[in-house]
Every structure is written in C-alpha cells, then in structure tokens.
Image: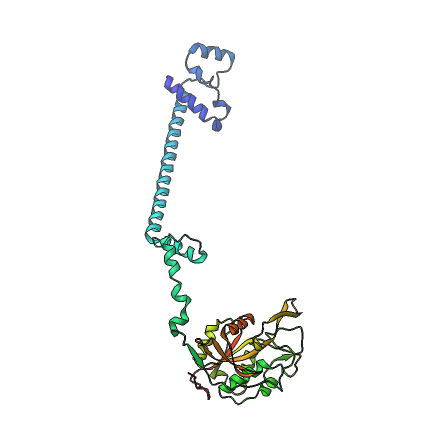
Length: 356
C-alpha cells in the first residue's frame, strides 16, 4: 500500500501539468490510509469527490506504467538515433580516409609554391621549390646556348633629310627592305603611319606630330606594328608574315631573334645618351603621358658577346656599333620596346642571308 501510495504521489507530481489542480494536492491521496481521517473529511464536506480510496490508486498505477513505457520508448529511440549518427560519422570518415588520402600532400605542396613562406625543412616545400626550375628557362632548353655572335646583312637607311623626326617609320622601312619589299620611307609615312597633331593623345596609339617636322615627338611600338600590318595588307602579304610586338623581352631574346634571321626594330636613345623623362600633357582620362628626351628608334642587326658590342642600323648615322651594356640599359629605360616581322607558312624573304 505504501508503494502504491508512492507511485500515486509520483504520478500526481509529474502529471500535474496535464491533469490540473484536481490531481496536484497531496492531501487527496492521504485519505486512503485511515478511515477516521476519511470520516472527518466526509463530515467537513471535502471528501465526496472521491468516494472510493482504491479508484485513484488504480488509475495512478495504470498511468504511471504508461508513463514508464513512454519514457523507455523515448530512450530507446534516442539511443537508436545516437547509434545511427555515430555510424554515419564513422562511414564518412572512412570514405574521406580511403578516397581522399592523397589530398593532404597536394595542399601542403601548393602552399609554399604560392606564398614561398614555408620552412625549407619541410620535404614537400623542397620538392615544390625544385619543380618550377625546368619551366622558368624554356628558351635555353629549346634553343641551346646562345651563339657568341650573330649578324644580318641589313642595309642602312637614313631618315634625313625628308623625315627629321621619322626614325620609327624609317626603321620599319629598313626592316621591310631587308625582307625584300620594295617600299620607301615616304610611302610608309604617307600611307601607313597613323599620325595626329601634337598633344593630348598616347604615343602608343599615334605618331604625335609629323615625321616631316623636326619639332615633333614620335611613337611607340604598337603604332609601328599597325603600320607594318597596314602595308602587308596593302600588298596582299598579311597572311604570309607575322608582325610581332616583343616589347618587354629581355635583351637576350633580341639576340636570339638575330640568330634566327630576324632583325629587330628597337627603341633606345640618340647616340645612347641618358634619357630624360618628361610629361608634356595628360590623356583624356587624366593619366600623365610620359615622353623621353633623346628617344630614338633603330634596327638591331647583330651582336658579339666576346667584344661586348651590338650592331645597329641607325637612321641618323647608318650602320654603327654601340657598347652592349649601354645599349641594353637604354633599351630597358625606353620600356623594352621591340618589333619584328617574320615570314610564316613557307614564305621566304628575298634578302635572308644569315651572317656569321
């Protein structure tokens, strides 16, 4: 009886949220213990709600059993969910370990390649540091060692007296003559050179001024590329020759071009003087347009590593030699600008005699 009373009390406390105040009082359950207490309650009028002391006990026992079954089912369900969750995590880890076992070395190797900050003691970093070496020097691997010297029989062509500021278009004409095209510097200047009056435009888009005017400026590599393409199109040879802007190339690449039979139009300075940077105007977007005092264009036709000299077809002086180190310095200070025109698809230049 005491156990039944305890279960009823337990059910009354746990079930008060569902059954209301009629099951929450502990005084109602104590009426089943003694008849004297029950008599006094009947006389006071508080007991008529439950005339039998056994009915509430049976109801409490049944509901308590149902409650225990519900709790057991709930715990079993939670246990099953936990087992399934652990199984899923274990399977995922297994798959990642089996299928992605090669990923960690790839990530470790990639980090030092991009940032260059990994310690040299890590084996992956050491391997990554040695991998780029074959790809950073494709030219020597493909071409071998640069010959000690090379020269091409390019005939000199002077810009004066007709074109006192036309060194760029004269140098291009010199190159085209070497390839066998019978064209004059005057024709090239009049028909194929993109010209605009002084000021307000880019030297990369136009010849600024006039090649006939000694007070004019000049142009840079893209303008000469356009002039060469214009001429080749006019004579039906556009598809037979490639006009290539090599601007940004190292001087060694220029020497390689000479050994391969390609004279190079290059930008340096008059007499290899030190250039002076000046800004005479801004472009429409406000960008300052830089010009170089003593800017000069010429044709590189040869070099000699032993004597340290380069051979130049200078539109002002004819065929001359300059100190190689000074030439390379001026070439770089004029933004390393260079242009070649080379035959493609079996086309052969008329004057393609390669010097020793």
